[in-house]
Image (cartoon, rainbow, N blue to C red; front, side, top):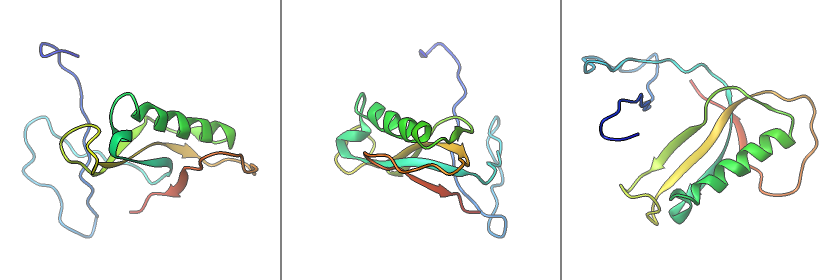
Length: 121
């Protein structure tokens, strides 16, 4: 990607059906409903949020998904829990991971265990 190329960027601002709804969106901005799903992710903090360190977070989650027999159910997400404006900032906190489909009974494996939790409405 360069300054002369166009690309699609997706950003998320969560809202709930029984609360305020987005209105007066700028041209080209649309609401996309993300269906409820399970998500396998890991929290990264500080230097882990910089490049190339962030890649080890993706690798850890992907390895966990495969080792536990889950299936990838969509594109990877980066969820910025706290962002200080600079990659690798010591106060950054973000979650990386994928939506997943449920696995049949799978036994535990050694190593870091990302969380797999259903998303909330």
